[in-house]
Length: 496
Image (cartoon, rainbow, N blue to C red; front, side):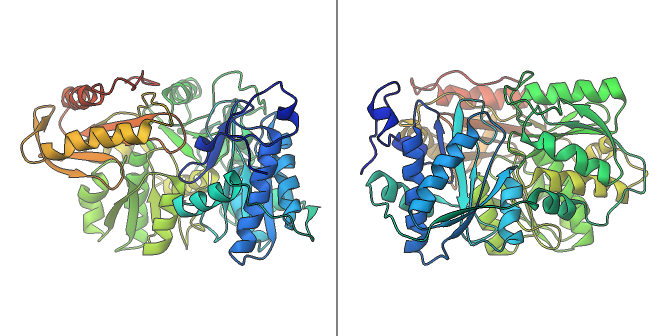
């Protein structure tokens, strides 16, 4: 049957019929508030649709499935598994996991598909599924559009042959794979911040096994998130990490989001280094080991990937691409890049470093290796060696899911004609890059970006200046003034 587009909790039909808000099918994830936007029969319909999509694409009917550490994620996963088995799929259930452990399971089990039940970095009350067929890739807009149509049109097809299998040992194999035979040769004291999320079961052990002294920070699993929602892009978590560094005298802090696919960094001086700047530090190091490498950066990221003199001297090439873990994974894979970096803290380390999927623990290990290769340098030394830029955190003003793309298009239409003559922050606009929203390029290398969030009812705004904080604030003020012409754009989630 076709799912109802309106979800009506506390009704007879809610316990019987699939209910799915269509807006939950996003660019590269399926994500809803639960139970307000999807019910358990709706999740089963999603599983039936995903299994039907596998058959339609000629994919072997076997899938690795996992769930994050939320009090409702197990029920969501079981509902998804019911739909998958109805579709004739052999489900290999690896239990609770971080998202990159599920991606790893595709390789470890030689599984042709993966489905990870997770709210990602979203707060409690959200759920969703990250899924993919062609490892290390996950669904992009084409695959998500196809799946949406199968599910919402009620075209899921039941077949014989489905079964469930519990698979043990993947967690241990994942950690062994992360650690390998590497051990630190220098002493390193690291605050490991997990915000009581799923990464609490993984990250501290990984760091200890490579020889790091771990300073625990909210490493007890607690799906109520009593301190803050684990999101290393949020200033609340970064401020807490900085306080832990200063209190403990640690060499740095490494923070992980709710499903463990992102990593945030605070240096030994308590400086909160945004992930794109960490990416430049890593790219400098990696381009020295792998000259002429290509690095993909998302459109929210610093211009230093293109302008940094050390990267230029190492022959590194920068490729700016669409924000989003599926977009970035696919771009890294398609152009043979060594790595991809997102300002949100997703890093995509390809062979010979990683397998191309985003893994916060892999990034943490590689940052420790980088510091091991530079035994006379602190993390703050590596930060200070970069050309100075001033940039905002990721700022997300509210905009309804059903309106945000049309709203963004009107904003972009106002900005594009400003190229060549208009200004932001008193600087002339030299170009407007529209690969993903509008990245407004200014004459001195400064820029401002506005785009639509792929996962939440928000727009996204980021600005950068190579000149000063005052110019940064002026650029933001002018860009925000253009955005504010749209009455349906609400308050920002954080300030700077």
